[in-house]
Length: 316
Image (cartoon, rainbow, N blue to C red; front, side, top):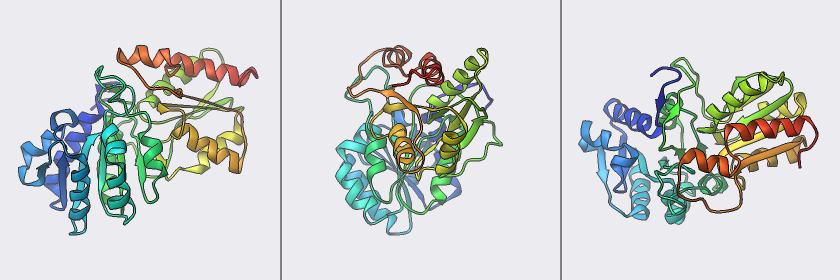
């Protein structure tokens, strides 16, 4: 895996999980009849005794995973993010989060990129839903490198973890020496003028946007927040104090996700000028991923324009 290579995070998730079940007998994988899409089919192929195909029964799957966790197993329950967060919300909340059972949840096909499946399969509220649950940890890796590290970090984290994966290929921006720690944000690029705070597959876009801003003489800081909950407050508050404003960008609704979490923190601790980029208060649609990102103001050029607005005082 090389920096710059295009790899789908869901593929990295499957590879890491397939390696993990071989290394650790406690790890088991449950799937809701989407193994080829989530890439958990890799687990079924290398260690079938650790793989449980539950079928199109997501609510049952999370209940089974909760029971397994009480026996000392570490279940990774995998389905599309839209089903994990909405169809099985009650089971996740009551059977996993409430008793703080040690279940790891994979939400595949997060956000806009769903292979043109459209609004019904686009999880645009999953981070908000999972973040609102007490005891739930929410992780959204940036690339394949972070995804693999997140799979192992979740194994070692005591309690429920929601890992959001993406379907589309994403440029690798971190090498194998990248240090991943749940609850700790990553300074991708330092800067003094404006800060871009990003998560998931939007972090590579934020990095490119910062490079574009640099050609205009604008020094942009980029902070990658792979853990939405617990939120790492220190670099966000530092950005508010040391730069002229903050742009958040996420592959999710602007309501309740990264932008909401950052705004809540700043409102309570250090008010700052801020622009939230993400899907506005609407459902998504079918089409080319990049075209949809641009239509809703979620692409690289939109990050650049938002930073310019903050710096010239036109932010609203």
